Length: 155
Image (cartoon, rainbow, N blue to C red; front, top):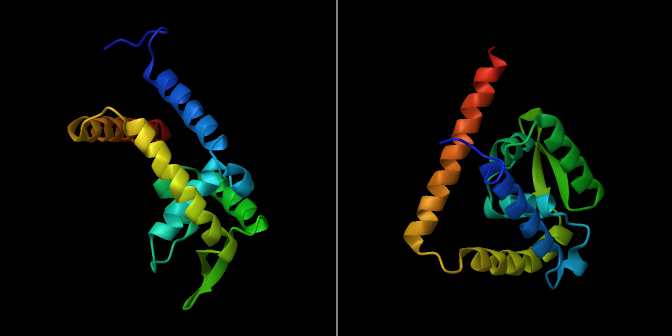
């Protein structure tokens, strides 16, 4: 299939992403969590979802497809904002796990409510089969890009 300037997968995803960010920014409760950017919210949600499992910066790199330097900057800012702390791991002085602060745990409830509302809006009118297909397509595109990036590093 040939890409065209009129209809491009990348542009449609960018437009959708911008709309999602604007929607999140304008949701009720957003003003209460103004220190939490969209990326911070996703990271807080991810760490919370892991329960008692340790989460490290490299986990964020893998989960969110970001570089080490980007992850480092985001984590440093979240520490400055009081959203997470780095704690030493017994047995490995170099390794630091990421732990949510009481403040981010309080904000988590507001964020969950907004996230569930947004997800419901995005999924409205789609069958379970269509949503499963969507995730399959997105995963395939992500894998295509991972393969391309690996190939370009070896050229």
